[in-house]
Image 1 (cartoon, rainbow, N blue to C red):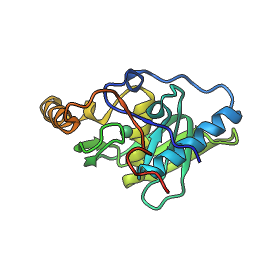
Image 2: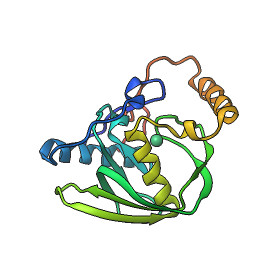
Image 3: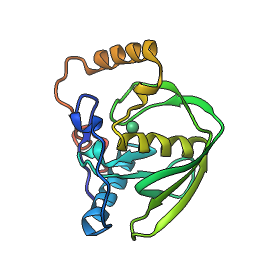
Image 4: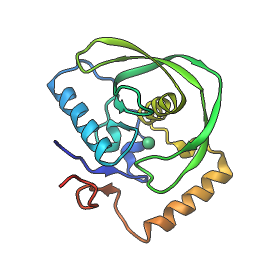
Amino acid sequence: MSLRPLHLLGSPILRQRSAEVGKVDDDVRALIADLFDTMRAAKGVGLAANQIGVARRVAVVEADGQPAVVLVNPVVVGREGADRDEEGCLSIPDVFGEVERAARVVVEATDEHGALRRIEGAGLFARAIQHEIDHLDGILFLDRVGPLKRRLLLREWERSRKGQTGYLKSLAADGAAPA
Ligand SMILES: [Zn+2]
């Protein structure tokens, strides 16, 4: 079990486009395991590698009672409909806003064994997948709420920081880690 500190809004890696993964090797599998451990400890429904400081195109999603999915080099190959709902992000704790997303998506991604898989989803599951793929492109949900709301949410974020500096959040120090 390996929990990694979360990178918070302000950390430059969150704004970087992450690099494609060439081969799914033991390093990538270790990264995937850390993503699952950290996501579950933080009670999230998805986590992208740059949120734990690794700028590679790897993310995990576990949402809405669907089986957990591994997304290496994910590509959206189909989208349908539109859906507005509230969204948050482990990298911007305590800040939530409504975001419009495709209601259903089809994604092609490599799994932890190096096999190409086709994943279809709707609802919260589809929303989480789209949110995580955005992370891999350096995009945050704040970029999709409109300029006015964005300004409000950024102010909320600054207030919630209570003058704290630094952009790493250790889950263990937070008491969120299992005993
Ligand atoms: Zn996020």
